[in-house]
Amino acid sequence: MNVQRFLVLFIILIGQCTQAQFLLNKDSIITSIEERIKLPIIPDYVVNVSQFGAKGNGIKNCKPAFDRAMKACEKVNGGTIIVPKGVYRLEGPIHFVSNTRLHLQAGAKLVFGSNPKDYPLVLTSWEGTNLYNYSPMIYGVNVSNVAITGEGIIDGEGNGLWATWKPIQSKGQQLSREMNHNKVAIKDRVFGEGHYLRPQLIQFVNSKNILIQDVKIEDAPFWCVHILNSSGVVLKGLKYDAHNKNNDGIDIENSNDILIEDIDFNNGDDNVAIKAGRDHDGRANMNHPSKNIIIRNCRFKGLHALVIGSEMSGGVKNVFAYDCIASGYLKRGIYFKTNSNRGGYIKNILVDNIRFGDVEDAIYMTSNYHGEGNGLFPSKISNITLSNISFDNVSNTAIVIEGYPKFKVKNVTLDHITFKSAKNGMTLSNTENIKFNEIVIGEKQGVPSSVK
Image (cartoon, rainbow, N blue to C red; front, top):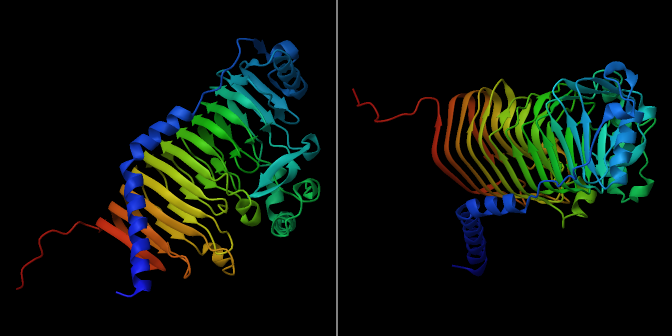
């Protein structure tokens, strides 16, 4: 055996051992993630927004009242803001302070206005590029111990003016990417008026110990819940009815120690999308990958169920998605996407025990997303295990795995995957060490018939 071949075999063996060790330790890894996540500690101080002049009549602008309530909590180092039953119109955003909970009682609804001038520019990220843009409707930066809870509704009113921005956003979108690629200082990436980049509905940046639980989310202008450069996050019991363009349910970006649990998704794009920055911005932040993420006991419904990418240049690792079901028609069930200019990696991913209905493409892993890139920064996809997953009818392809010639998709295990039917079976290209065990498309065949 020559030295080159020995080295190749040695690298393959190391990859297999790494994947096996990850699977062997999965229970302890999940337990350690749960132990590190600390729920927010909120002081006993309680105020009601009505004390500050808020009226739930759907007419009065209640933003000043919410601002005063938040300021009152800040003065005593935190507390709970109660929002009683009623419709509260806010002409502008809610900006969180630390140690504070916003609690929406049953029958309470926040409806945000759509005048861009009411939303100041803040530090944010747009499709993986750091910049200053219109404030999300609910926003927190550099905060800790914060919570949004209750049985109420948060409505972003995204189907009006904001919706008209989608067809005219391309110039602003391309400018943001050029600034990213040219390494323009973030302080000089000032967008807002004339650039038509829609704001997120809920976003926390550079924050920790975050809880969002039980509320219903409707009609976001852009992404619904965006967790950016943050840690120690619980998203639980949420319900969605958000069908505007790019209404991702949950976007996790450059964040770690995340629990996503018991969510009823029904939104117009990705249900869960795990990201880690676009191109240069992401690669410059590779010491903060998205990692240690648990997704369990969720009900998927939307465009795509579980997505990693395409903005993942800072790396994504240690993701556990299990014990979920999907309903309705999905374009793609499990979708990992990157291109040859992203860089970064997707590794140590376990998806187990998920039941899908009808899909267009069932399992799709690609290093050639939209055919973009010239090969300067290929991404690495490796150590992926998909097990005990079923699909009903697949109108296009059951399994697609495509790597990049210089960086093949490696060490993927598909174990006990079933498809009732599929127009196309499988496409593999630029892959290495793909393992299959009990893959069934159509009826499972037993003993072959005898020759007549």
